[in-house]
Length: 255
View 1 (cartoon, rainbow, N blue to C red):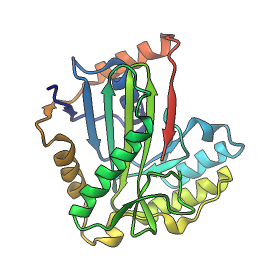
View 2: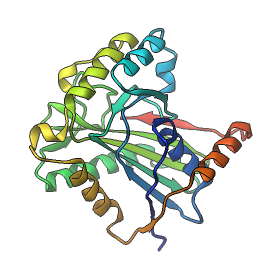
View 3: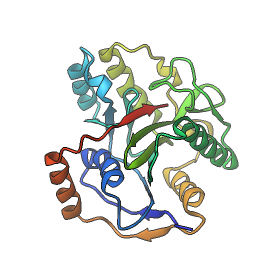
View 4: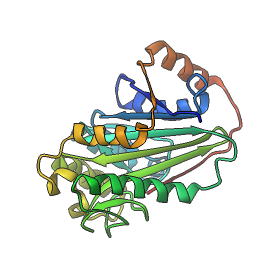
């Protein structure tokens, strides 16, 4: 049995955080089939490619900056998601042939995994879309049917798949503020009341609590911990990625 590799990576900020998952999907790490990264990001407004086609995209990017969030464009689909130091992001890369098989099942599987993990920690976590939520999806995770606390986006290429999930742990006001402004600029229907974080329902719940639970949930079977990927590795891959044309077929979705 091949064990997943858990990477402990420090990047130079939101742009590299968004780039790293797809680069690991394309190039891998050593001979690992399964690669995990669990991290707390700097304030990021992660626009999808679809968002960039909206007439209000430039205004939304400026609104994000005004709220202290760096605007970036993520390769996965869906709509704008915002996260910050009160969030935990999980990038799960699986490099294997025929990645299109099971695309919807993966959304369902990870939503159930995440909700079950939170239930064990005393959170009334449920799988399902809250009407009016940001980046809406059937397999969002909410608390008590009122506030979205986890969203996931999936990227599928010929190399395999990347599932990125964002846990909103603390800092509801910051998330709600930037989403209210940017969704207004983009012209999306959105109910700010659906933005929430775990701390709103379980006082004292911290980012480290969530990160530790995720490490246990994902890596408890014996994942290998490795050191940071150095800047040269990332710089070399990004340079190669800019100049290489592979004609790769890709599919993206979010929930």
